[in-house]
Image 1 (cartoon, helix red, strand yellow):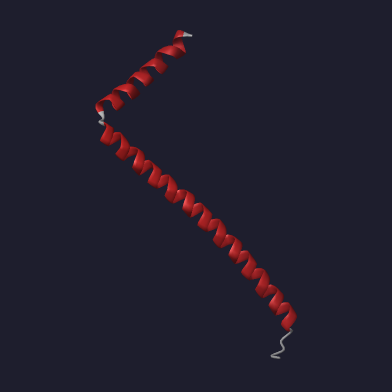
Image 2: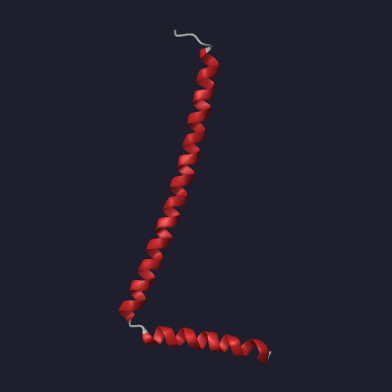
Length: 74
């Protein structure tokens, strides 16, 4: 048990030291940057999914249009 608890305690000690060295303004700035990056990637994923869906609908529509048209200009 001591084999695992010692590295874990060192890790949390380093994390607490890091946060202790930062002011509240620094912490909020870091959290804001992280949330902005996460929001960017979430928006990118939803836009990409929406684009793929519209592309599929467009391809289905044009495939149906070409099939129904049969080369006729009427």
